[in-house]
Amino acid sequence: MKIMTIYAHPADTITNCGGTLARHAEAGDEVVALILTHGGRIHPNKYAEEWRKDDPDTEIIRADTAAIIANKKAELERAAEIVGITRVHTLDHDDEIAAVPEDLVDQTAELIARERPDVIICDYPLNSAQTANTHTVATMTALAAIGRAARLLKNLDGSAEVNVRQVFFTSYPVFISDALSLHGPRNDLYIDITPVIAKKVAAMDCFASQGYDGLFARKLIESNNGEHGRVAGVNFAEAFVRCYNETRPLLPVTEAALADDPLTRHVGYSQINLRADFPAG
Ligand SMILES: [Zn+2]
Picture 1 (cartoon, helix red, strand yellow):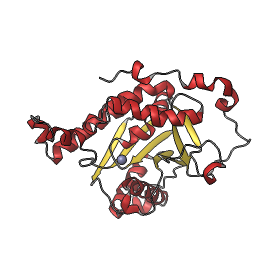
Picture 2 (picture 1 turned 135 degrees about the horizontal axis):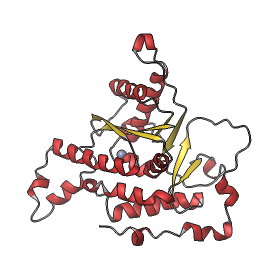
Picture 3 (picture 1 turned 135 degrees about the vertical axis):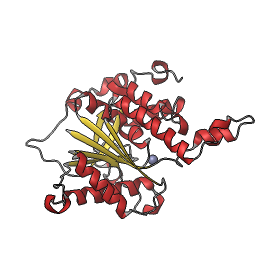
Picture 4 (picture 1 turned 30 degrees about the vertical axis):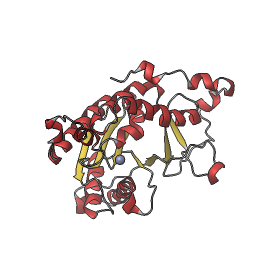
């Protein structure tokens, strides 16, 4: 199977689904990533912090946009290597996209046609007022591009149609475990990322320029992936909403559900002490 991620900003892929990607890479699946923006202005924490010091490092405070973007891309490349992403595409649009640009849809469709993924992972399109959320714009772009790639004709476009089989949405900010609470909308699929948690920590440590390294990485994984893990009955999990229905021959009950023991859930959930096992550098 081939997975392609489509996200707005350089760190999004790792924070949202880095553990899942690491598990698929370890299982032999190919993983490629597409980042729509250059990340030159999002989370400029390192540079802002340096400016506030009495004796700032001149090399850091003099960094121009090109240097900031180059540094961010180097961070992304290191993180991608850790989780097993074989190729990173960056389209270098501005960080703050206010609406879906047609050229970006074309560029994204072209890359989908070139990579031919079975599965795409992107953010849940949270905010229908698109101007407020670049992540939503990124996903609207991805969905439009998936449609465009599916209508390619070899004789007209030089590339045959590509049918993406499933789209998994991340970062739906809901932590419920059933179809009844909160009127039903929920993450309907969890991936246990406990076996690869060291890779997710190490990959997040790469994004030092935006302050995602060190204690931030550990806190985010403990809280976000930890809470998804609590719902999922494992130490750490990443949560997904499936875009398309699935068809199966029989009603599915997962191995995890069959093995679940409510009385010992607290033990399984608390086996890893992230800060002790992976001390911040
Ligand atoms: Zn982002």
